[in-house]
Image (tube, rainbow, N blue to C red; front, side, top):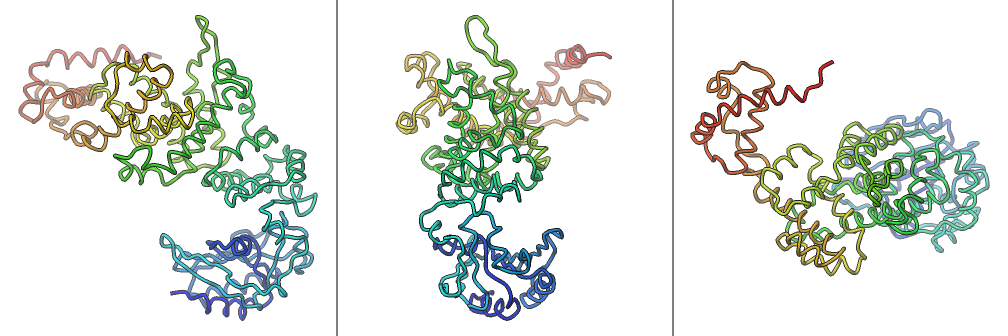
Length: 516
């Protein structure tokens, strides 16, 4: 097991010309453990030093960025040490070129700070517990900025040197609850046109880290106000003036930010919001960033689909169109195909639970079809819908209605009697019903036992193999969840009784297939 005393001594000996820099130093001044150590040293020494340290730690060593000469060491405990080349091979030339004053600090490894290590969720983290102030290099009042919790540009050219810093400023602010000072905000605004210059992968990483922080909505608003999404996601700006008659000043954009806030509240307070199923739901909500990105994009197509119909503003087909817009955006940011598929499925289907709630009674067949067609997006979609519905009421009203959200679904008449809040409450009760069906009646409704197979269909209905067999099997599954039969014998009897009707399903399906 890696020990702090050994690690500090090893770094002082094997990387004697290196300096502790970056996040590990910043976090240590805040009294927080960091997931890695950043070292800066002369370019000519980076490669060999990385290999020497890797060998001593029995760790994996690989080159991350040939252009900037960055190497990474990953220990068996999951701890990382990143080594990067100094600008000009001199720390006094390197620090003025760094992004923010809070990061323009350096501590020689030879000063041997006390390193404290601890393990969280299987990963080792580090804290520089004692720092020799005389050895610390601070050229631009970085320690004061840390104390004041301020993010200040280290020089006027930082965003020209690396436009990714436009996003990094907000990510650091969100992660550490810092404020970006006014001059730096003005500098970001002046350089916002460069926001699409970094690679998609690098922007993705910054946005994900931002959205893992507890108060993402606030920072997303400021980023959009300063123009950072203007080229990345041009349609976002159109939300600000769309549907102000419905959402108030700020239109759809105001609503979008509220949905991000609500999904943050749900993810951070799962036991309060869904007390009966919070333990079952915890495995579904590990990736906060994915849910927040979905909330951020869920109504992206509302402005282009907005139309007045019978004196009412409507957004016909904004869900599938929004999914297409989201796909382009996420692809540009190099999101994985799995992430894109899940996010876009949620966006394209986010009105489905509301459509279920428009019926007085939700049948088992309706629940089965919902989870069958949504697949892995089923439960995640309910998280998005929870945030969407609750965005229409104040936080005070929401907290008051949460206990009632666990009650049986009220009638449509009862919800109308309670006004706008009644609609939200009924929707929450509907979501709780879907959670109940999923977790308590999964084997009966969501994944019913398959009582008959394709061979049974072909033999009993005297049909050849083909598309019709799958259609009939799906019809039988829906009949099963409705309780029309409960075992194989009853299923075979149902098959014989409805033979003519089942055989005709193929004819009905053919009518829906467009011919070339």
